[in-house]
Length: 385
Image (tube, rainbow, N blue to C red; front, side, top):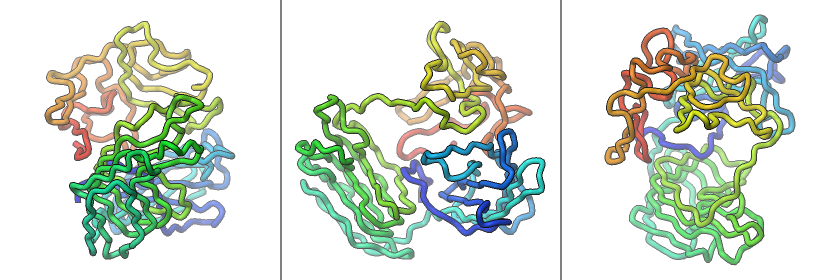
């Protein structure tokens, strides 16, 4: 199976062990990464949690990116005092994780298994084009997934219905549909609509679908209704929703502008690292100074415009020079965005354990594309270089 090109929801739990129930760590797996959550006793600002991991059955430990103390009470992120990720993992593989509160004897261990990319198929139901919603209610089983095959089929409800497909089933694969026109024009209530609406179930794969022209006009604002979506669910029991190789494009209406709250919601420390912030004019702003962005934090970036006072303590001011042939090749959906060897920012990035990869020398280049690595690939069939 092809590598996952995109995920809409990352939901799942694994077995864990620790030195105490209340402070026990939690790992949430996906195919190639693990989200780690822990609230150890004694956690405090300025005291990191050190992370080590290894594939079960192997001897060598690898270093993960340390987790920083950042409890956020009364928000959706208030799951643990420390949160982090382990990336570049193999699918269907069990890993051992060791967590240590820095400069203390407090430790915890846990194991977690990444998801498998294999979905054994059972019944395959072909679906024809239609102008009314498709209701998916028949489930498969963990070893025999039920496939709803919509390749070549278009479901266009022409804004007469709020959904093109509703799902209330488990272990199902929804494949290859073209979906249009979700969101009944006569429905001006604030409730959320979705071209694909998941009402119940778990272990659902949505792949190779093309979804467009969804949403409703809010007559009070002139914009689309907030949260109207190509895919939507408010099902509290939903676990392991996988959305891959889908194209979600051209909603029916513009959304309203985003608004960032005026209180800290990001992890402490730099959230924007090793980026190239290249403006056409050095008189422009690379970073916002608006009050709504009070907790933004940038460092180790290559930039040529204005930045707030105190930002970019380790950044590099200058104009990037790119490698020969740099740019995006639309015909091949590939791009080269590496710096030239003589450019500012070469070898000036910050190494991030378990995240930085593909660079030679002591420090990575600033920017997403390291010298010496293959061209980047884009689109619904993209893979890592």
